[in-house]
Amino acid sequence: MERTVDDKRKHPRSPCNLYVSCTLASSDTPVEGTAKDIGPGGMFIECAAMPKFGEAVEISLTLPGVGTESRLPAVVRWATGSGFGVQFGFLGARDTHAITELMKQSH
Image (cartoon, rainbow, N blue to C red; front, side, top):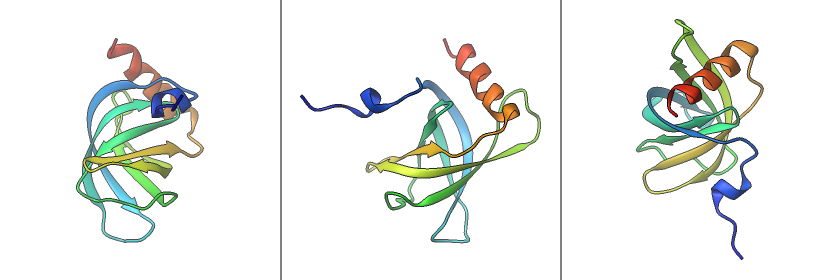
């Protein structure tokens, strides 16, 4: 039986609609996108750019309740025609808490 992306996740995700700016390791020019789901382990970004599997990405966004821009380190884990999924690197307590609170609001 084939496993889906959801089956492989350690953390659940919740739907969202957040503006993000992504700086890919292969380019100094940020690309804009929309985070469509998020969880403590990662997010899916709807975006025209198609980074490579394993590429490092820095995601800039304003999380609700934080008030300042967060910069989240991540690695591309998969891509489709409409966007790509990332796994977060180390997140601080502030960003982890904000993501958890955002997930609670979406349920």
